Length: 384
Image (cartoon, rainbow, N blue to C red; front, side, top):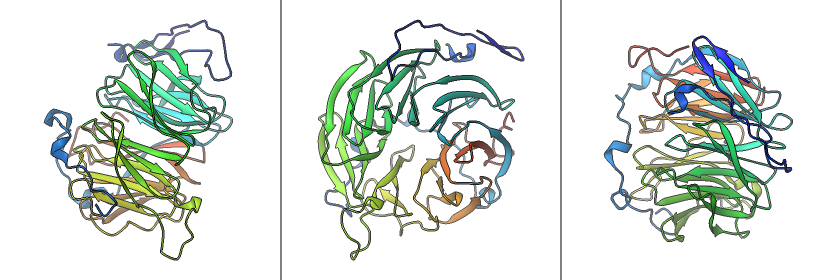
């Protein structure tokens, strides 16, 4: 099978393999361009994490007024169920989406036309998380079927499935060197060697269900968000616990052990100075990575749990999603800049393009919306 879009030819790679309940029977077709302490322990200081200046994207800081009126460029009828996950390719030309419920498909969208160029059923039910390695060789997906599926992105085919988890996998992340995959599930945290495609070790077992993960840009620190409102920090080189933050533990009169205290989302800024957490308590908290203190009081305003967060490549703007739409925040001050209400239901997923021009939002209304969030005069015009 091949798909022709304008001058681009999309090649198919056929894989014939035995089909297990968690093993996708088909492959992705890809374009030629793609071949080729406020806490119990103080947070770790940045200078110990070996961040290379070349790994930090330098974008001109835009005044907050320029973010107050994002433009909706496209609305895409994307899936037959909620759009659970989104990610852009590094060249910002393609968007990958993952559906849920009865539509656990990976879909690839060419942003010049906002047209679907490929689709494959990746899991039995929902695709709960997705990550593309920084070298763009591996696309990893996880779902409610407890399987971890790996796709060789540049060649366009499925490679294998890891089956060691015994429960729903809710989050995953790939280290900046593209060598290690980390998965967080109701049965704990596991690490996988992507080069040898084998399990490495178990970081945390059943004692604390894991809802969210984020890897520091330096690659040696993992933040994990858990059911009872705690964020844990791990040394990935030694597998040891560095400390924990009672990040979303609720008011003093709130009963402990409430499931609505779960830390649903985590993200680091590109330079690693800030860790952002969002929870079922409807708040977003911004932590200074060096001092371990909250940068300012919790961000409030969403009417439901925080479903997704994304940080702009310049590290200055935070997008958050919930029942009432998408909010844009100034990460330096905590100021609310804009509220995007285009979706007709909960917003489940968010992603900024790497060039910083676009924000993609995916909703329970089965649509993807593409927003221009950086004024054209600040960067080159988007393709849309």
